[in-house]
Each structure stands twice: as structure tokens, then as C-alpha cells.
Length: 245
Image (spheres, rainbow, N blue to C red):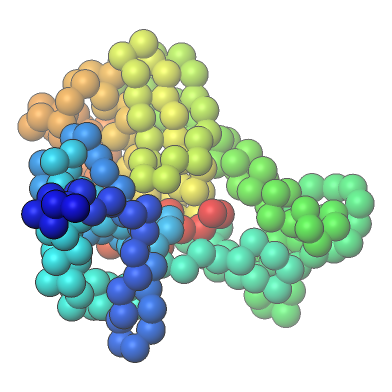
């Protein structure tokens, strides 16, 4: 047997690293577009170690351990999703609401107040609460976004053909040159000025399909205080994206 010839270590699907005495599972992925090793914490899921196509596992493992302190500082700040179940609390248009299951077989989600606490009354069996609530949030988001999109489209003199709600894991919206806009339904959980910013942003793409200075000037033209919503998303977007799974 030739001891000088050894096969290349296989890249695992995941690995475990100890953080503050606790094991933390890190997903490992090879990305054809990656040019270097990268450690990140996506909006959903745990830590992710990305390797370029030519990456070697020994180098990737060393990279991970060298960045142990970086990971330790951020892993405890990772967003936790609100529980879409009876007794949970979830934001609606920036205001926390208690979730209360009614047990009724029929009906829609109702917004009310119980003992001074904003509350969402959700009908149906407990195992269907999350689905019913999510569907209702999508309907509410659609209504809000259709209204704000129409306002910005009128201001900028463009035509929007379709508006759809999506559950993207990392995007708040997207716009095609043909006038079709997709929005992330979770925007209805944020304060209204945040949803308004994303609507202005996507509609502005029908004027400028890029992120050039001209594009940002267009967003500002329809929404002068755009920086407020943009800053909120930068500060709280990860937490918002965690809601709803």
C-alpha cells in the first residue's frame, strides 16, 4: 500500500463546533459561485459554512475554528421565531399581539383587545392555528401592499401588472421589467412605514432596474423619508424574517 497517496478528505454535510461548552451544528455547503470560505448565520436555520468549488475540508475546518469567537458573539443574537400558536405573541403592523385560539370551527381571524392587550382571535383546531394565522397575514399584507403600491405607481407614472405575496427566506421584494411585483408577506408584521418603504423601492425599479444613484433618487421622489424604513429593516430585518418559519 502506498502510504504517500491519500484520498482527499470528503466534505461533510455538517460539522459540530463547541461554543461556550455547548455543541453547535454548522451546515456545510459548496457554492459554485463562492470565491473563498465564508461563515454566516442565515435568516432561517443555524450557522452555515460555505466553501468555494476548489475548497479543501482541512482548510475549511481551520477557517471555522479561527472564526469561533465571531460565531460565539453572534450565535446568541440569532433571531428566534415567534410561536404562531395559542398563547404566543406576534407583531402586527409593528404592535405585539397575543394569539388566542377560539376553538370555533368557522370564522376568520379577528383583531381585538382583551384586558387592554392587543389580541388576535384565531378559529380552528390548535394544529391549524399557524396555517390559519399565516394565511390571514398574507391577506392583510396583500391589501396593505396593493394600496401603497398604487400610490407610488401613480406618483412615478408607472403601471404595475400583478402583485403577489411570497415567503422568501432573504428578500423583501422583487420586481420584473414587465411590471410584476412579489412581496414578502412578513412586511405586514413590521411598522407601516417599513412596508411603505419596500413598496416604494420595488415600484421605483419600474423606472430604474438597478440600484444606481438615479434609482435611489427615484425612491426618494415618491417617499422622501425612505431612510427611515431602510434603516429599520437593516436593524430588525433578521428578526422579522424569522417569523413564520
